[in-house]
Length: 400
Ligand code: NDP
Image (cartoon, rainbow, N blue to C red; front, side, top):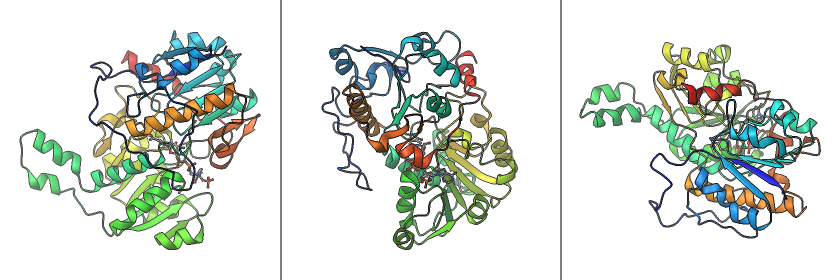
């Protein structure tokens, strides 16, 4: 019997939904690169249900308990006396979502003597100290591709919201006004701008494809170059360093994982390479950006706007300076946890657990760490090391 600890975000303030806005949840048949959607043997949830909050339980309870396992579901993950800390010593599996991450630091991993598997219900396993997982022979897996296209949609939404000054204009209506000049004095067309993505993986490449019809110039930076046919199809300009990419871009979008190589890649020095008045969109990870340098760039006008949905740590304290910075279009971390995406990643977690319990290999494309080294998708996209430093700050959310 395995003990599974699943850390999920809280239910809606008004209670767990009893009905939904839509009756169905259209899904793609296959991902753009030919990868299949998750293939569990069965699911015990209704597609479109809220699965990512505590009462949704990722639809796992029936499956786990009927196979004799114990499931503990909690949102209590930070600070002294968290349920996660209490349950860790005899947990074999820990599951959490990047939206409400269970920070699996080296200290926690050291206390979890029976831990064998850490599953990210989503994409991005930077909330786990990958170095500690490597050294303790713990497998780390994520549900690759489950929400990449969902995030790409949010990137396009965020770019348009910033460039067209949508949110302040909407607020004018909520406030009973009609101040057109106030709204448009920061409003531009995206057409003819230069857009650069840091990373052209699943999300970054999708963003490039979605933006092509807007008549923008498209640029990318990545560790590996895209095939020549893709570069020609989308008329892409490749950059081999950040300075070159941001110097030419009116809009920069970050789409790389957080790992020691990318932590704080946007900082006071690199922000000075940006064109004055450019826009920065970050749906990748909050820690890619230096917190205070960003506020400085928004206040000075070096950046005309910042949008995205990722913070560090999560949840951010109520006095986190990004909340009150000028010209931002930030949301809580939502882009990859639409009801459509939850259906896919809950099924993906179920698939991973079925493989684990039946001692079958976990799909290579889901692996981040296995057998004491980076593996699968992790070996391609991450670097060894730890990016969880400072995550204890998340406990301040409750206290503030
Ligand atoms: P992919 O693995 O498909 O793409 C990641 C890309 O980043 C790869 O092309 C990789 O390059 C590139 N990369 C890695 N390190 C660097 C670097 N130092 N400089 C430039 N490029 C680099 O992942 P996805 O596109 O699906 O997701 C990307 C990230 O987005 C996730 O890791 C996660 O942090 C975030 N995300 C956010 C979500 C949200 O809800 N907001 C949901 C899903 C993901 P290569 O492989 O060529 O080495």
